[in-house]
Image 1 (cartoon, rainbow, N blue to C red):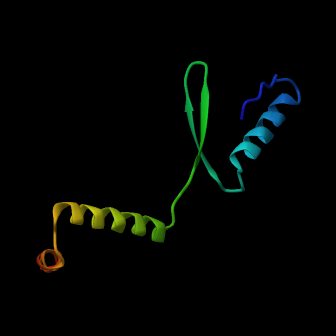
Image 2: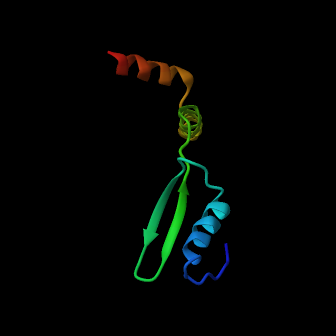
Length: 84
């Protein structure tokens, strides 16, 4: 969003409308605000579902296992050891 707004009686509500529109905000969306002396950064927080997080984690683990050359039998033994 590249827009110059002047804050006046209507500027503050226009600013909020522009931010909502630019970020595609809906009710209950979360925002993270970063601020400094003369700036404000607004980031929409995207929370991944549990299934998305599990899929991402399992993909990373699988890549790491392949990189390390770990075979299925080693993983099975590690699971047995951890469950004791």
